[in-house]
Figure: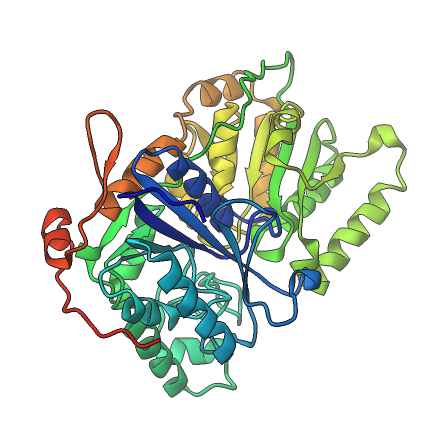
Length: 459
C-alpha cells in the first residue's frame, strides 16, 4: 500500500482484472483506477476478482493477494460462489474481505459489480465502514434479470422490458414464481445500503427506476475512453467503403452469428465485393451451438481460394493494437442481441471516425443516431444487416457523410470528473480534490448524500 496523509481513499471493486479477463466493465473500472491516480488528493485502490481460469493464482490459504507486484492493486480470489443467490459461502473469504476493509480504511467504496463477490457484500461493507460512501455502477441488468442480466427471454430470445415473478418463472420453469419474489427482496435489501448508483446510459436509469430504485439516487455517468488512437488519424481509403469489422467478445449475445449469416445471404445474392474482419476472443464462453456454427462457417470459407474468402478471423487484440485493426476497416458492426449498457466499441470506432452499424436496441442505439452518424438495423435480423452492408458498400458519399458527423466519444477525464462529483470529492481551482471529512454528518451535508445513522462494526 502507498499512503499519503489527508488523501481521500477510493476503493474500486472490479469484476475481474482486465489483464486476466477481457470485458467492458473491468476495463472501465481499471481505467477509472488509473485516472484517479492522476488526481491530487485522491488515493485509489483496486480490488479485482478472479476465478478458476487461472488456478495457479490461488495459493494455499490465500484469499486476497497483490497483483503483479503493483502498488494498490489486489486480487480477490473468489471461492464457493452461489450463482443462484449471488453470495459466497466461504467464511474464510468473508473474514479476509473484512480485514482488507479495516486495513485499507477507504472513504469511498465503489463497486463495479457484485458478481464473484456477492450482493450481500454491499451490506457487509456498510457494516464494517459505516462512514464510507458506497457507490455502485450498473453495467447490465443482473439485479433485475436472472438470465445473465441480459433481459432476453430464454423461451424465444425476445427482449424483455420488465421482470415479474411469473415472467421470470416462464424463463426458468423449474423455479416457482415465489423464488423470484424472494430474489427481488434479497437484492433490494442489499442495494438499499448504496448511497449513489450510476449508469452509463439513460435507458438503464429508466429500467432500474421502474424496477424500484430511487430515481434520486441514480446518476448518469457515461463510460469514458482513454486515448486509444496513439495519435493516429486514420485516413479514408479511396474507392468503395466495403470493409467491415467486428470488435469484441465472440459470445452468443454479441451477435457475431448474425454477421456470418448476413455474409452468407449476400454471397447467395451474388454480391461478394466486400470484406469482414473479426477481432475478438472468449469463444470458450459461448455456447456449443455458436462454436459449431462458427467452426462450420470457417471450414467452408477456408476451402475457397484465398481471393474468394470474405471473412477473416484476426483473433484477440489489445488496446495498443486497436489502431492497426481499425485501419483495416471502414465500418464497425455491433450486432448485439441484448440491450447493451453502453458499448465501448462505439467509442473506439468513433475515436477513429469509423461509423457504426448497430442493432436498434440498448446503449448502441442510444449512442448512434440512425442515418446521421451510423446506421441501425433490426436486432437479430441477418437479412436487415445484409441490406445495410450492401448499402454501405455501394452508396456513394454515405460513409463520408456519416463519418463526418460522428461526435467525440466521452473522455476518461470527463468520466473521472463525474465520479469525483459522485464521490463528494470537490475539486479545487488548481485541480486537486478536497477529501471528505471523517464526520459523517458534515460529509453528508457537504455532498448532498442522504444521512444514515452510524452502525456498529461487526467483524
